[in-house]
Length: 316
Image (tube, rainbow, N blue to C red; front, side, top):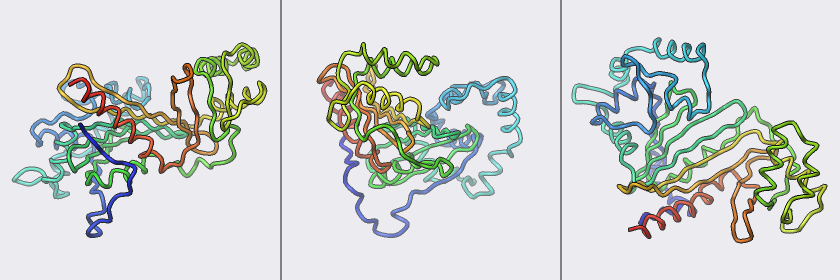
């Protein structure tokens, strides 16, 4: 069983460098070379290849949420074609020598391929979208992230610094100014009602929202108190219309079992910042929409990791 405490502040580092993650920017060709030098370690995403060249239509493009047309696909391929020889650039940067690649670099890529805990992170905020993979085993964590599928940030750090690194995930872009939201700090609604209202708004049928509210089964609660139909309709509609981004984390404990144990953390970015989306089943199928601070991600993730580990242990 894995126990990672993400709720306790990390212990002070012994030195300035101990408290910092080591980060490197690598192009996709450089990353593939390092993976080869790490014993052919698989990367945490798949890229379809044609004649040895990565294709933009591979699954990485899909995971970034971009449906590239033929023009964009060609632009992506052309961009990769303009990059210098990866062996040469890695040598000039001192990352690859006659004895192979930098030990820390190889170790980080190796950890990405053989973790104990795995987080797949997908974040969209405004026009920006980032895909990241965090992998942990023992006292070490490695992370890989990209916003375009061409340049990647590879980082590795002690597990005590994981909380700090997770906080970087929730940073709101500077061009998205925060304001006031019509969604209360804690909104608790029946899941079926929230889903139906969202579908009506996406279909351009906002006129159906009052009808759906009248037919809904279950109370709508704001900060623990039941609210009226009109106020509930406005708050629930705001959850959908104010959305400016979302965050989703899939957490899993990696094992040799055929069935994976997965936990999920979902947030939505509204006008006033991040709100968590938490399903509840103690009183029917409901969802709680709660305002959260960006630094709360580690706290929200900790019980999910614990549940994943407990489920894995129970199956043994």
